[in-house]
Image (cartoon, rainbow, N blue to C red; front, side):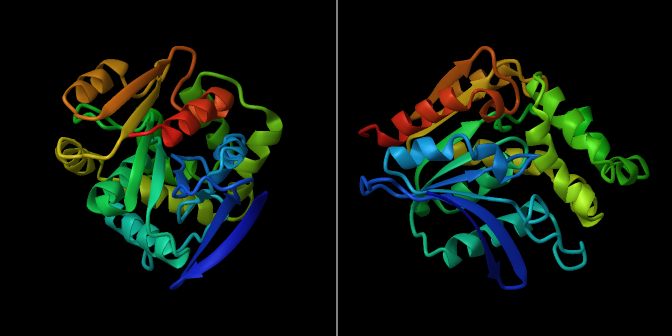
Length: 280
């Protein structure tokens, strides 16, 4: 059963969606982390599939996104380390000691850093169009959101969600879904300020250096699911990165783009549940 919840951890309020398993298969829960500028809503079509297969599925809005708290940059640094610390506190507050992790997009790099720093907590890892190659770059569509003056204006425009999600996925997103993604930006200017601070402090190249080094030592079963129509992250770079890693499987989806769970949720859900149930 799908529920929408809020929990206060320290001074930060997290919003998260949860699907309880229809019947338990005694497996660790699954935590799904969204990318930029999305929110936990992007997983709503996939979470029931996981629940039907016996998994507890938890999808939080990152701090600064969706319905989670949007603190001032003086109170939350919006750096990878700040996000990682907040995520650790969120997981601890839910009393989850071990789980499978699914990450997507450019905040997926932060989720990967969390996993690499806490391998004892991670049962399995799935990566959906998140940067893992040292050659990955922040695309202009996202980079401009952190620029002086331009970023200040763009991040206050609710239509940036339409332009970014549709540009990255290369498909049109339905008005009903876009209304949900736009809502935080229409409700308060804090959503735009949080996005601006995130883009200015993403530290992508430093994160990728840690990810590249960490994945070479990574032992847990890992699946990389890749929409090859992604206009921002090259499949060739991903293939080269995966070839040098152990225990990592690459599955390509020819029709999908940067946000594969948006338009190919049934296929993604099937791949995830099979991967999570597979005997090691």
